[in-house]
Amino acid sequence: MSARPNLIAILGGTGAEGHGIALRLARAGHAIVIGSRSAESAASSAAAIGEATGSANVSGSGNLDAARRADVVILTVPYAAQMPLVREIKDALAGKVLVDATVPLMPPKVARVQLPQGGSAVASVQDFLGEGVRVVSAFQNVAACHLQDLGHAVDCDVLICGDDVAARQVVVDLARDMGLRGIHAGPIANSAAAEALTSLLIAINRRYKVPGGAGIRITGVTEDADDREVP
Amino acid sequence: MSARPNLIAILGGTGAEGHGIALRLARAGHAIVIGSRSAESAASSAAAIGEATGSANVSGSGNLDAARRADVVILTVPYAAQMPLVREIKDALAGKVLVDATVPLMPPKVARVQLPQGGSAVASVQDFLGEGVRVVSAFQNVAACHLQDLGHAVDCDVLICGDDVAARQVVVDLARDMGLRGIHAGPIANSAAAEALTSLLIAINRRYKVPGGAGIRITGVTEDADDREVP
Image (cartoon, rainbow over all chains, first blue to last red):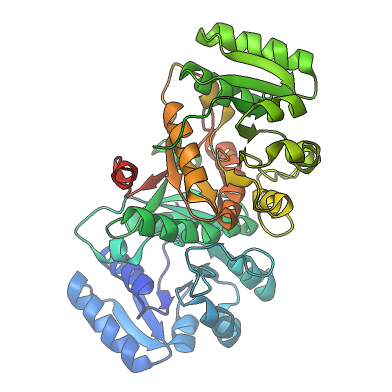
């Protein structure tokens, strides 16, 4: 079991995916700060999450301020906003875990894999930030709509990639708190697969008309396999 | 429902993955020709498959001869052998469906995603062969060991990518005959995700010590969704 974060920032937390993650973490009792370009939007989103979950530990702020205050920062912004935001908050991330949920979708062809330079948008962030920030890739394949619907279990695993195993474990534990199974899936370079997979899920959603959005499950991993490793 | 192939060639059919695919197709009553660099090895492998499945429709041959005779050709060779073999059999593939199961693993770091030039090894084959051959990517995520064990159901979906929908449907039907669920997953460019995913599955196998090998399932797609589309 990893240390429980004191405060989790969710940047882009007013978007659909960030909102879903925030709802589930708040419901689990985590202290959350929603970050947004607009501190006002963040505060209003935070209030809605507080009301939906009954949590008194949800606040809102500008992205940079939210990143400064938190010890775990989750990034849930569109691809085009990812690197500009990372540059903006870089100094606030030193020594922290950055959980990046970015999917390099390039509209309009979002159902076709279009790999970014180097293959993984999240690995590029790790490269840019260097070893002083432990970047973990997660949540690329979990549909926002399922996350937001607190009344049902999400039928999707979370592929968790990162070069630092302890940082990955922080995210495995957060996923578990959200009602999801997190799976250690190797180094940050492996994020390329999880990112690309999202375009396949979009293609599958279109062809099979999947309500709420398709997801993935890893088979063969027993439910308690991860616990066995942790003392 | 697509047309049932008259003869399916499985090139590299003496390897573990090819052997597993051949076993399951032969058991389903398909006529199979195993291809190998050595016609002798192919014949001996074919005899073993015939014996294991009780099928009289399994023969062996050199790769080129097998490709010439078949109307659907399945490629199950190591990455390093893929393009050399495709060049060798190019003329025999005109007008046919080529099912490519190649995973661009680059030993020794097979649990780390290392994307090939362009992102997808199979898309490169489609580029090389041009429109005269309909290339379909499939079977990258199904562990050979599960395929070979005819006594149990394989808990893994098959992501099927290709630019030609009818050709994809041929492979969806073959997967069904093998006892697997094939999922239409978009254009051939999307094969990049299925190929990269194999390194994650290897990483997962190592960490969680998965017996026989982890697999994937797509959630949210109802079992009969594909049938609904086919008259």
